[in-house]
Length: 327
Image 1 (tube, rainbow, N blue to C red):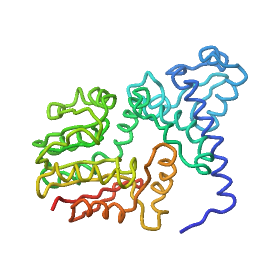
Image 2: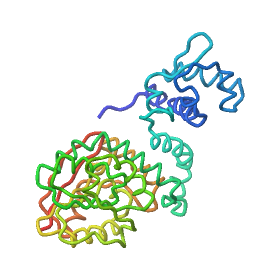
Image 3: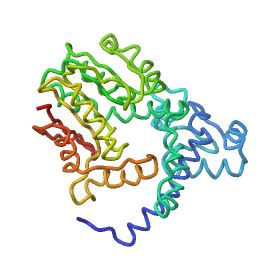
Image 4: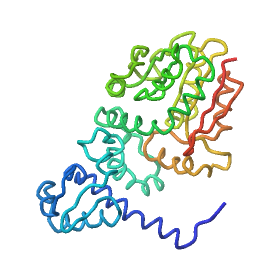
C-alpha cells in the first residue's frame, strides 16, 4: 500500500476549494445560463441575480479550472460542461447535478455524526422531491456498469427477473436487451417507478416490464421466480433487515433460482477497495442503519438464509457482483 505524503494530504484537503467553486457553478446555473452563447460576467450576473464582483471572480475561477472558456471579456461553456451540465442539453445529467448540490449540505454534518452518531430522523428519502432526481442519478451512474452486469447475468437464461429496489430499471433493461426471452418485474417506491417509466418509455423492452409499487418489506416478490436482482440495496440496511429480505427472496425463488447482489463490497481488512471504504462514511451520513459489507459477511448472511454455490465478478470502480443459488 502506498501512503500519502504531507504534500499529497494537503493537496487533497485543498480540493475542497475546487469542489466548492464547482458546486457554486451548479447552484447559480452557470452552465445553463451560458448555454451555447458567450456572456460577459456582468450579463451573467444579471441573469443569475448575483453580485457582479462575485460573478466575475466565479467565472474566472471556472476558466482556471478548465470548466469554462474565456475570450476577451466573454465566457462560454466547454463541450463537456454544455453536454452534461446545461439544462437545455439532451445529455443533461439532472440526477448527478442534484446529488452534488444535495451532498454539499449533507457532508457538512460529517463531524457531528462521527462524534455523536447518526440521526435516523434526518433520512427522509421517501420524499418524491428527493426520490425522483435521485432515481435519475442512479440511472446515470448505472450506465458505467449495466452492460458488464448484463453480460454476467445473461450467461445463463434469466427467465422471470425480479429487480428489487431497482430504481430506474436500467440494469433490468440492459438484461432484457441481451436476453430476448426474459421478463422483468421492477419493485420500488412509486416516485422511483414514475421516473423509470419515463426513462424506459421509448425502449423496445418496456413491453416486457411489470411495475410494482410498495415497501420492500411488505410487497410480494412473487413465486417461482427464476432470477432476483438486489442492486445497491444491501448497504442501505443492517444485518437483521437484510436477513428479512433475503428470506423473502429465498421463498420467492424456484429451486436452483439465482440471487444476484450488486454492491460496493469490502475486503476483510475493510480498507479496500477504496471506493467501498469511503462509501462507509456515505452510509453513515445518508442512511438510518446502513453500512458497507465485506464479501465474507455477505456470504455468511446468504448462507444463513439457505443460499449456496457462490460466484463473484468485479464490475470496476469498487463495485462487484455476488451470484448465489437457492439450494
